[in-house]
Image (cartoon, rainbow, N blue to C red; front, side, top):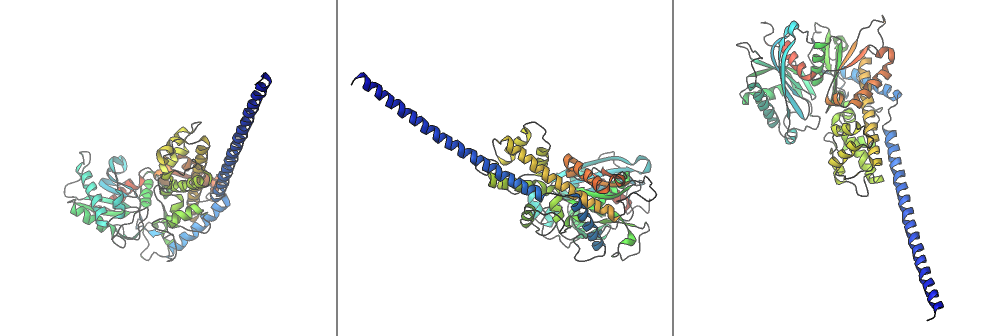
Amino acid sequence: MGKGAAVVGTAVVVCAAAAAAVGVAVVVSRRSRRRREAEDERKRKAAAVLEEVEKAMSTPTALLRGIADAMVEEMERGLRADPHAPVKMLISYVDNLPTGDEHGLFYALDLGGTNFRVIRVQLGGREKRVVKQEYKEVSIPPHLMVGTSTELFDFIAAELEKFVRTEGEDFHLPDGKKRELGFTFSFPVHQTSISSGTLIKWTKGFCINGTVGEDVVAELSRAMERQGLDMKVTALVNDTVGTLAGGRYVDNDVVAAVILGTGTNAAYVEHANAIPKWNGTLPRSGNMVINMEWGNFRSDKLPTSEYDKALDFESLNPGEQLYEKMISGMYLGEIVRRILLKLAHDASLFGDVVPPKLEQLFVLRTPDMSAMHHDTSHDLKHLGAKLKDILGVPDTSLEARYITLHVCDLVAERVARLAAAGIYGILKKLGKDKLPNDFSQQRTVVAMDGGLYEHYKKFSACLETTLTDLLGEEAASSVVVKLANDGSGIGAALLAASHSQYAEAA
């Protein structure tokens, strides 16, 4: 072969290589283009889901005013004993709230959700007020939340008996007197006196056989007897009634109490002559504390999304406690999880494979949601760590983290604004939504309790801002929303003191 042929051969090889390179480049370019198109499509789908969520979670002020008006209507129906009223407006039999004169040793048991507290307090009257108090918090094993009544109350009584045994020298029970207990029972009860009431239904994830229709004080008393605990229940109160009592003990201007924690409820002081269903002699004070049971509030004005509807359908009590499912701590994280799951399915938010843990009901708890929502780091590393720990996603993109943060923001804002609308409804019912005609500086105080309000700062800030918006600046200047930490527990002890069997003798 001559030199010219060699050159030609080399040229052919070079050309073939160049053609191959061009072919590879074309393939790479096509793959790159397909990846870009796929990424653009994924972003488009994510944007579409977020747009739908933003619309579903929207709560314009006009809508909130309508919800407040609907709340007032349902309150009035409940006070008339309308059997179809979802807001039951239960009479608490508390017509006198604490005055500050209470004294002695009293216990309280606060059963309100997945935990309960046992409390003891030494009261020193008007001068010394609360001399000393101690408490212990106990988690309820999940199997007892769906077990039998005897198992649940035996467990509670056993923990109460252990707590009594640790009573120190700073607490004094006079000779010949029996220990007395205020029982905060934060579930719907048909109360028949200050110290008795039958359970209407379980809420907050409890589903226990053998208690509905039974006197819960009798159930607890029998359990205490089985533990050899000599103690009398002198006051049965709902957590909101207890919070109201505890709030009034330290601030005479408290007119209502709201719980925003695992569950939600509200209580307020009503004029006795504004309660058509009251049959007895009007109380001497002229007032009666009403336990609203507002968690069951429903209205076609409530902005229920597909996520709310699915959550309700799959719950233990479908069709019930709709307002609670929209605003309480037990459900916030679950609503966020459902939105993230749709984003994972429709827009591959966490990659091509949907994280298996994201399919699990209630895997995302509200405290975790709050922690993610409060992440202020520039790269949202704390939020990313939560997603890794909870959902098992080893590495989330910055975009996925910011989308998750946005979802938390949308859900928390809706919840806070819906809760504010309910509070505004109570103030409207009491005529406290406007400045007094004499322009006096009289305060109207709403006592708040519950972990959602206390610990979820973005939630509580939004609630207060929304309430100011609904009231207007002038009326809002006389309304105070005030944390009443542990109000339901100390309140129950105070009501036990004011209804003590030894009060007459004292």
